[in-house]
Image (cartoon, rainbow, N blue to C red; front, top):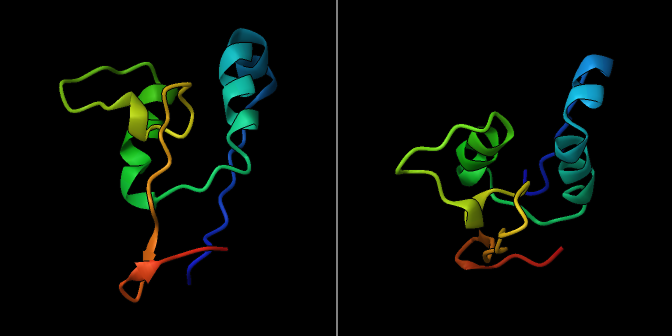
Length: 78
């Protein structure tokens, strides 16, 4: 499967407490993303910063930089 659907559910309390994170999630809906960078989005969502965190790989971050998606050795275009 090339296009992998994703679902993010947040509680009412989370929406009230973290409106900026809900906005970031909503902004990322149509961004092409690679699941091998999922850890960066999760760290970003939870405000965990480590030396391994890369904001350019977090689909939820304003510094996110889309990277080519490869399928069968060729760039994948939807």
